[in-house]
Image (cartoon, rainbow, N blue to C red):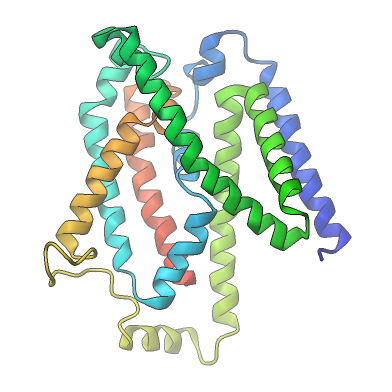
Length: 289
Protein backbone atom coordinates (compact mmCIF):
# COMPACT_ATOMS: atom_id res chain seq x y z
CA UNK A 1 0.00 0.00 0.00
CA UNK A 2 1.04 3.57 -0.60
CA UNK A 3 2.27 5.85 2.16
CA UNK A 4 -0.29 8.51 3.06
CA UNK A 5 1.98 11.19 1.59
CA UNK A 6 1.99 9.40 -1.76
CA UNK A 7 -1.80 9.11 -1.66
CA UNK A 8 -2.08 12.81 -0.81
CA UNK A 9 0.11 13.73 -3.79
CA UNK A 10 -2.09 11.67 -6.12
CA UNK A 11 -5.30 13.24 -4.78
CA UNK A 12 -3.88 16.77 -5.01
CA UNK A 13 -2.68 16.10 -8.56
CA UNK A 14 -6.12 14.89 -9.65
CA UNK A 15 -7.83 17.85 -7.97
CA UNK A 16 -5.40 20.26 -9.62
CA UNK A 17 -6.43 18.92 -13.03
CA UNK A 18 -10.08 19.66 -12.30
CA UNK A 19 -9.25 23.14 -10.97
CA UNK A 20 -7.12 23.88 -14.03
CA UNK A 21 -9.99 22.85 -16.29
CA UNK A 22 -12.34 25.15 -14.38
CA UNK A 23 -9.92 28.07 -14.64
CA UNK A 24 -9.58 27.54 -18.39
CA UNK A 25 -13.37 27.43 -18.79
CA UNK A 26 -13.54 31.09 -17.75
CA UNK A 27 -11.72 32.09 -20.94
CA UNK A 28 -13.97 30.07 -23.27
CA UNK A 29 -16.30 32.66 -24.77
CA UNK A 30 -17.14 31.00 -28.07
CA UNK A 31 -17.10 27.73 -29.99
CA UNK A 32 -13.74 28.78 -31.43
CA UNK A 33 -12.32 29.15 -27.94
CA UNK A 34 -13.70 25.80 -26.79
CA UNK A 35 -12.74 23.64 -29.77
CA UNK A 36 -9.71 25.54 -31.11
CA UNK A 37 -8.31 27.28 -28.06
CA UNK A 38 -9.04 30.62 -29.70
CA UNK A 39 -6.56 29.71 -32.45
CA UNK A 40 -3.85 30.81 -30.07
CA UNK A 41 -2.24 27.59 -28.83
CA UNK A 42 1.59 27.70 -28.72
CA UNK A 43 2.93 25.20 -31.24
CA UNK A 44 5.27 23.65 -28.66
CA UNK A 45 2.33 22.91 -26.37
CA UNK A 46 0.35 21.45 -29.28
CA UNK A 47 3.38 19.35 -30.24
CA UNK A 48 3.80 17.88 -26.75
CA UNK A 49 0.05 17.27 -26.60
CA UNK A 50 0.14 15.25 -29.83
CA UNK A 51 2.89 13.02 -28.45
CA UNK A 52 1.08 12.54 -25.13
CA UNK A 53 -2.18 11.75 -26.93
CA UNK A 54 -0.65 8.94 -28.98
CA UNK A 55 1.07 7.53 -25.88
CA UNK A 56 -0.74 5.25 -23.44
CA UNK A 57 0.15 2.93 -20.59
CA UNK A 58 0.47 0.20 -23.23
CA UNK A 59 3.37 2.19 -24.70
CA UNK A 60 5.10 2.32 -21.31
CA UNK A 61 4.76 -1.42 -20.88
CA UNK A 62 5.35 -2.76 -24.38
CA UNK A 63 8.28 -0.74 -25.74
CA UNK A 64 10.69 -1.38 -22.84
CA UNK A 65 9.69 -5.04 -23.13
CA UNK A 66 10.68 -5.06 -26.80
CA UNK A 67 14.20 -3.87 -25.92
CA UNK A 68 14.46 -6.24 -22.97
CA UNK A 69 13.67 -9.25 -25.14
CA UNK A 70 15.49 -8.06 -28.25
CA UNK A 71 17.05 -4.84 -29.51
CA UNK A 72 16.24 -1.33 -30.77
CA UNK A 73 15.01 -2.22 -34.27
CA UNK A 74 11.56 -0.97 -33.29
CA UNK A 75 13.02 2.55 -33.41
CA UNK A 76 13.10 2.37 -37.21
CA UNK A 77 9.32 2.71 -37.12
CA UNK A 78 9.69 6.18 -35.60
CA UNK A 79 11.74 7.27 -38.62
CA UNK A 80 8.68 6.47 -40.71
CA UNK A 81 6.54 8.45 -38.27
CA UNK A 82 8.62 11.55 -38.98
CA UNK A 83 8.28 11.07 -42.75
CA UNK A 84 4.52 10.53 -42.47
CA UNK A 85 4.06 13.75 -40.49
CA UNK A 86 6.12 15.69 -42.99
CA UNK A 87 3.77 14.44 -45.71
CA UNK A 88 0.73 15.45 -43.63
CA UNK A 89 2.23 18.92 -43.22
CA UNK A 90 2.80 19.26 -46.96
CA UNK A 91 -0.41 17.81 -48.39
CA UNK A 92 -3.17 17.96 -45.76
CA UNK A 93 -2.56 20.78 -43.29
CA UNK A 94 -2.72 23.53 -45.97
CA UNK A 95 -6.22 22.37 -46.92
CA UNK A 96 -7.40 22.32 -43.31
CA UNK A 97 -6.07 25.79 -42.55
CA UNK A 98 -7.22 27.34 -45.84
CA UNK A 99 -10.78 26.08 -45.31
CA UNK A 100 -10.79 27.42 -41.75
CA UNK A 101 -12.64 24.40 -40.35
CA UNK A 102 -13.32 23.74 -36.68
CA UNK A 103 -13.15 19.98 -37.22
CA UNK A 104 -11.43 17.99 -39.98
CA UNK A 105 -14.72 16.24 -40.68
CA UNK A 106 -16.12 19.57 -41.87
CA UNK A 107 -13.85 19.12 -44.89
CA UNK A 108 -15.80 16.00 -45.84
CA UNK A 109 -19.05 17.87 -45.25
CA UNK A 110 -18.02 20.69 -47.57
CA UNK A 111 -16.80 18.36 -50.29
CA UNK A 112 -19.26 15.44 -50.11
CA UNK A 113 -22.21 16.61 -48.03
CA UNK A 114 -23.35 16.40 -44.40
CA UNK A 115 -24.24 12.70 -44.54
CA UNK A 116 -20.66 11.67 -45.31
CA UNK A 117 -19.47 13.99 -42.55
CA UNK A 118 -21.80 12.31 -40.04
CA UNK A 119 -20.72 8.83 -41.12
CA UNK A 120 -17.02 9.71 -40.78
CA UNK A 121 -17.62 11.27 -37.36
CA UNK A 122 -19.59 8.22 -36.26
CA UNK A 123 -16.90 5.81 -37.41
CA UNK A 124 -14.30 7.83 -35.53
CA UNK A 125 -16.35 7.78 -32.32
CA UNK A 126 -16.99 4.03 -32.46
CA UNK A 127 -13.39 3.07 -33.23
CA UNK A 128 -12.06 5.54 -30.65
CA UNK A 129 -14.33 4.19 -27.93
CA UNK A 130 -13.25 0.62 -28.67
CA UNK A 131 -9.52 1.43 -28.83
CA UNK A 132 -9.43 3.82 -25.88
CA UNK A 133 -11.55 1.45 -23.82
CA UNK A 134 -8.65 -0.99 -23.86
CA UNK A 135 -6.15 1.74 -23.00
CA UNK A 136 -8.43 3.02 -20.26
CA UNK A 137 -8.70 -0.43 -18.68
CA UNK A 138 -4.93 -0.94 -18.89
CA UNK A 139 -4.39 2.39 -17.13
CA UNK A 140 -6.88 1.46 -14.42
CA UNK A 141 -5.09 -1.86 -13.83
CA UNK A 142 -1.79 -0.01 -13.28
CA UNK A 143 -3.49 2.44 -10.91
CA UNK A 144 -5.03 -0.50 -9.05
CA UNK A 145 -1.64 -2.17 -8.61
CA UNK A 146 0.10 1.03 -7.47
CA UNK A 147 -2.60 2.44 -5.17
CA UNK A 148 -4.41 -0.66 -3.97
CA UNK A 149 -7.74 0.78 -5.14
CA UNK A 150 -10.34 -1.57 -6.56
CA UNK A 151 -10.52 -1.73 -10.36
CA UNK A 152 -14.01 -0.12 -10.51
CA UNK A 153 -12.82 2.73 -8.27
CA UNK A 154 -9.72 3.29 -10.43
CA UNK A 155 -11.87 3.39 -13.58
CA UNK A 156 -14.34 5.77 -11.93
CA UNK A 157 -11.72 8.21 -10.62
CA UNK A 158 -9.73 8.37 -13.86
CA UNK A 159 -12.86 8.67 -15.97
CA UNK A 160 -14.56 11.35 -13.88
CA UNK A 161 -11.45 13.53 -13.52
CA UNK A 162 -10.64 13.34 -17.23
CA UNK A 163 -14.25 14.00 -18.23
CA UNK A 164 -14.65 16.98 -15.90
CA UNK A 165 -11.51 18.90 -16.90
CA UNK A 166 -12.09 18.15 -20.59
CA UNK A 167 -15.73 19.30 -20.58
CA UNK A 168 -14.95 22.37 -18.51
CA UNK A 169 -11.77 23.61 -20.12
CA UNK A 170 -12.12 22.46 -23.72
CA UNK A 171 -9.14 21.93 -25.99
CA UNK A 172 -7.02 24.55 -24.23
CA UNK A 173 -7.14 22.70 -20.91
CA UNK A 174 -6.57 19.36 -22.62
CA UNK A 175 -3.41 20.36 -24.52
CA UNK A 176 -1.80 22.07 -21.54
CA UNK A 177 -2.48 19.09 -19.27
CA UNK A 178 -1.26 16.73 -22.00
CA UNK A 179 1.95 18.73 -22.30
CA UNK A 180 2.58 18.72 -18.57
CA UNK A 181 2.04 14.98 -18.39
CA UNK A 182 4.36 14.44 -21.36
CA UNK A 183 7.19 16.31 -19.64
CA UNK A 184 6.42 14.46 -16.40
CA UNK A 185 6.57 10.94 -17.82
CA UNK A 186 9.54 11.68 -20.10
CA UNK A 187 11.60 12.86 -17.14
CA UNK A 188 10.28 9.85 -15.24
CA UNK A 189 11.74 7.64 -17.94
CA UNK A 190 15.09 9.42 -17.75
CA UNK A 191 15.15 9.11 -13.95
CA UNK A 192 14.39 5.39 -14.30
CA UNK A 193 17.37 4.99 -16.64
CA UNK A 194 19.68 6.83 -14.23
CA UNK A 195 18.43 4.70 -11.34
CA UNK A 196 19.07 1.48 -13.28
CA UNK A 197 22.57 2.60 -14.28
CA UNK A 198 23.38 3.61 -10.71
CA UNK A 199 22.40 0.16 -9.44
CA UNK A 200 24.12 -1.87 -12.15
CA UNK A 201 27.42 -3.62 -11.50
CA UNK A 202 30.29 -1.90 -13.30
CA UNK A 203 30.63 1.56 -14.79
CA UNK A 204 28.24 3.16 -17.27
CA UNK A 205 30.80 2.61 -20.02
CA UNK A 206 31.10 -1.08 -19.17
CA UNK A 207 27.32 -1.43 -19.17
CA UNK A 208 26.99 0.06 -22.64
CA UNK A 209 29.92 -2.00 -23.90
CA UNK A 210 28.15 -5.15 -22.73
CA UNK A 211 24.92 -4.05 -24.43
CA UNK A 212 26.79 -3.26 -27.65
CA UNK A 213 28.60 -6.60 -27.66
CA UNK A 214 25.29 -8.38 -27.21
CA UNK A 215 23.84 -6.42 -30.15
CA UNK A 216 21.19 -5.02 -27.82
CA UNK A 217 21.57 -1.45 -29.13
CA UNK A 218 21.23 -2.27 -32.85
CA UNK A 219 18.49 -0.13 -34.41
CA UNK A 220 19.11 -0.43 -38.16
CA UNK A 221 18.43 -3.61 -40.12
CA UNK A 222 19.09 -3.64 -43.87
CA UNK A 223 19.10 -7.43 -44.32
CA UNK A 224 16.11 -9.73 -44.16
CA UNK A 225 13.03 -10.83 -46.05
CA UNK A 226 10.97 -7.96 -47.42
CA UNK A 227 7.66 -9.72 -46.76
CA UNK A 228 8.24 -11.52 -43.47
CA UNK A 229 10.68 -9.38 -41.48
CA UNK A 230 8.69 -6.68 -39.61
CA UNK A 231 11.84 -4.79 -38.67
CA UNK A 232 13.55 -4.64 -42.04
CA UNK A 233 14.49 -0.98 -42.48
CA UNK A 234 12.50 -0.32 -45.64
CA UNK A 235 9.34 -2.06 -44.40
CA UNK A 236 9.49 -0.46 -40.96
CA UNK A 237 10.00 3.03 -42.36
CA UNK A 238 7.34 2.72 -45.07
CA UNK A 239 4.90 1.13 -42.63
CA UNK A 240 5.54 3.86 -40.06
CA UNK A 241 5.09 6.57 -42.69
CA UNK A 242 1.74 5.19 -43.88
CA UNK A 243 0.54 4.68 -40.31
CA UNK A 244 1.50 8.20 -39.26
CA UNK A 245 0.08 9.77 -42.43
CA UNK A 246 -3.31 8.20 -41.76
CA UNK A 247 -3.45 8.66 -37.99
CA UNK A 248 -2.10 12.21 -37.91
CA UNK A 249 -3.76 13.33 -41.11
CA UNK A 250 -7.29 12.05 -40.52
CA UNK A 251 -7.64 11.39 -36.78
CA UNK A 252 -9.66 14.09 -35.03
CA UNK A 253 -7.71 13.80 -31.78
CA UNK A 254 -4.39 14.47 -33.48
CA UNK A 255 -5.38 17.08 -36.04
CA UNK A 256 -7.53 19.08 -33.62
CA UNK A 257 -4.46 20.01 -31.61
CA UNK A 258 -2.77 21.33 -34.73
CA UNK A 259 -5.85 23.31 -35.82
CA UNK A 260 -5.68 25.21 -32.54
CA UNK A 261 -2.30 26.75 -33.40
CA UNK A 262 -2.03 30.28 -34.79
CA UNK A 263 -1.29 29.53 -38.44
CA UNK A 264 -0.10 26.92 -40.94
CA UNK A 265 3.55 27.50 -40.08
CA UNK A 266 2.91 26.85 -36.39
CA UNK A 267 0.78 23.82 -37.23
CA UNK A 268 3.55 22.34 -39.33
CA UNK A 269 6.09 22.86 -36.55
CA UNK A 270 3.80 21.08 -34.08
CA UNK A 271 3.10 18.18 -36.45
CA UNK A 272 6.67 17.55 -37.64
CA UNK A 273 8.19 18.25 -34.24
CA UNK A 274 5.95 15.63 -32.65
CA UNK A 275 7.56 13.02 -34.88
CA UNK A 276 11.03 13.84 -33.57
CA UNK A 277 9.84 13.79 -29.97
CA UNK A 278 8.17 10.42 -30.49
CA UNK A 279 11.55 9.19 -31.76
CA UNK A 280 13.18 10.57 -28.58
CA UNK A 281 10.46 9.08 -26.41
CA UNK A 282 10.82 5.64 -27.98
CA UNK A 283 14.60 5.83 -27.49
CA UNK A 284 14.12 6.60 -23.79
CA UNK A 285 11.66 3.73 -23.33
CA UNK A 286 13.87 1.31 -25.24
CA UNK A 287 16.92 2.30 -23.19
CA UNK A 288 14.95 1.77 -19.99
CA UNK A 289 14.17 -1.75 -21.23
